[in-house]
Length: 380
Image (cartoon, rainbow, N blue to C red; front, top):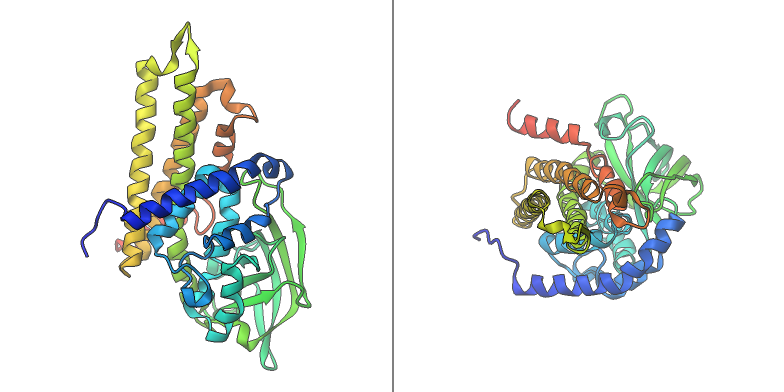
């Protein structure tokens, strides 16, 4: 199949539909839930009814069965409205459920995926620990055999949806003495003995996404809730490959929102009776922002297309994440700089874009980790 730089008619229709729903259902909630520093949980049911959760989940599990390109369209449009809300939705439909979809048993798929796709159960993903973030090999949460199942013990932090989830997919090691080997994933239900939410974290950005710290103390997980026994690292790689491409769409959404806000500002505000947008310097700055956004979008959808063809390497995914998450920093900083003091006022969304964009360089492998992955796959 030849690479096309145009969305199909179905994808364009889907894009318009998502944009309309986001404007109707998400936009009115943004300011309220940014103030509350909480996620509007009712959105899961609303988006589930619209068939906009777990987008790559097949129809046999109540999902819409769409492709990666369509998922990126959705992610871009939601993050264009609010990155905090977009974060919780992305984790639910990606990191939390992808491992189940990729390598879970048929029983596990039917137990969780239909409910997740309908928004009836909220998912979280627990990999990061106080002493292990991008360094997956440093994970210290352990899983030891107990009868027909395992006992989980450890602490997870910076867990999106951690405070509101109904289930969490947890990365743990069955052999603490061998870095990164013996990694296994477990699906743990909220309310399981030994599993507790120890605190909700307050953050600089993504305020409307609930983030928490989780504790597992001899938490029993039955065998049927195990994913990729001893080979969880491979499942994790496939999950992160998809997620890193999704971060390109997240970055593009925030970048487009910052460009939209900047364009509105320079066309409405005047200096000595002349619109700011008539200044050559400002016109050039806005044009540069537009060029970067278009480049981010092209790279993201190329990565998504490669993923749909089964041809995306980890290098492809890392290139998308590194370029887009770094490039959006330039865009949001320029958006604030062009508005000067007005850009720092809380009522102005560009200060939110600045705070939200800063987070994107960290999850699912920091920018430094992406550099190392790319260098390794280049042969260095």
